Length: 78
Image (cartoon, rainbow, N blue to C red; front, side):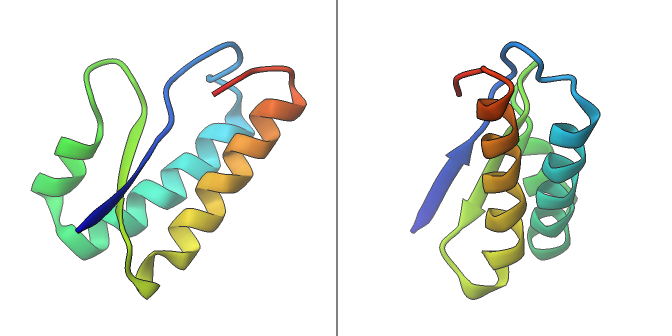
């Protein structure tokens, strides 16, 4: 089964530092699942990441958590 981690744009979602971590998480997702799954993980105008609960996703989860922490420090809620 999948563990879903979704991050949606809010406040300073466009901040380069946050997006860089999201890109890293998405790239790991893309490498494992391929192009179709990567496309499906980005939902309409939102930045969304769907991650599987496997060891290969430790790096993706790490980068996603960093993005969330950075966003919270900037005063945004996700």
